[in-house]
Image 1 (cartoon, rainbow, N blue to C red):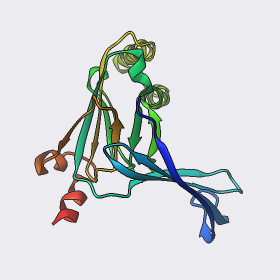
Image 2: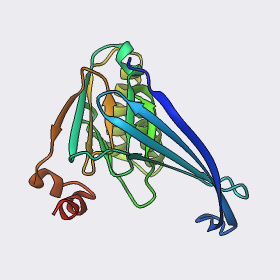
Image 3: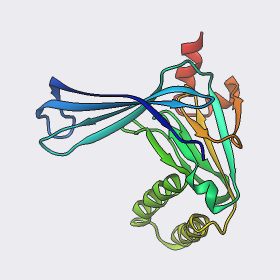
Length: 199
């Protein structure tokens, strides 16, 4: 596993900013800058409200990148420790599970590892299962069992990040990266904005 090197940290207040959750004035921000091998500098910003505990995390690359799809074939339990940097505009896919996490208005970026990504997919699925019945509930249970086997290193799978703004990567020499074309971008959330931004 390639380690992430922290190159700088900074904390500051936004005394005039209001919390989007409770409307109280004053937010705290913590920035952590990472140097990622073969990718460049990445900034993780965490904004918190002392009043209600609201927290929002975002990831942005400090170097310019093309719209990129990055994939990793996860073949062993050791691969579960590989670092994953996901910007808030990235779509996360695990084709073998039929699972995807698409960006939304309140979407957060994160720095985690492959196992942490599986846990996030599992959390979303368990939340959605509260309203599922019949075949959909059965299918969701099958996916949960696959995730459990994958977390134990007993199921091979592919992790894919598609980021129209190139703010995401999988930190491994085994990860495959490719530039996405306009047709593929148009099928992604925020893809149209990335096309406009490059023109």
